[in-house]
Image (cartoon, rainbow, N blue to C red; front, side, top):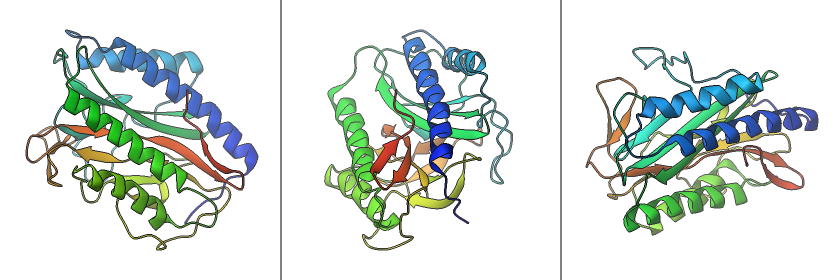
Length: 255
């Protein structure tokens, strides 16, 4: 069931979104060559603690997960698409990192992700990241009252496929509010004019995931969490929490 938010609810979610933006910025700043991924998690934890916010990631365990998630950020490196578990492996110059972070503040959730390269980036990674951000922007632009979920999905998928990138089947965005994951699901590919009609007060996490090799295949790593590209190519992930309002889409996790 989709839960519509009042304008006051959306304002509260914006405050949670600001915390997420600060946590991502701190984790990204910590991402330098030679630093372990766990240092990025520590940086994000400090921001959440200072804001008095909780993490919807820490301890999260959906039905398919073998263990609760042990961190407040997902750190997905190179061929990892999403759900990367931060460990002690040092980041290397040129690594492509996707950070995904959430916050719970005052009973409301925010969720956002960003991709970047550590140190000197490769041109092909720069193009991949730019396409992920372009796909997210296209999805946000389609998140308007009167449109449908399929319009968002079609906008995202069109950018991804036109650029020649793969789109992992079964992964996409979601509703968000009191909980990190709510109805409806938001696919990253679909047909325009189909699906639920968008209304004022809906809040969605819009999050394209692009696979550089053009293949859609992926597998679950031995940790039971990290999703990796089947062909070993790199991946990028971009996400914002977006409120659908009569005045147009409002990004709640912008810095």
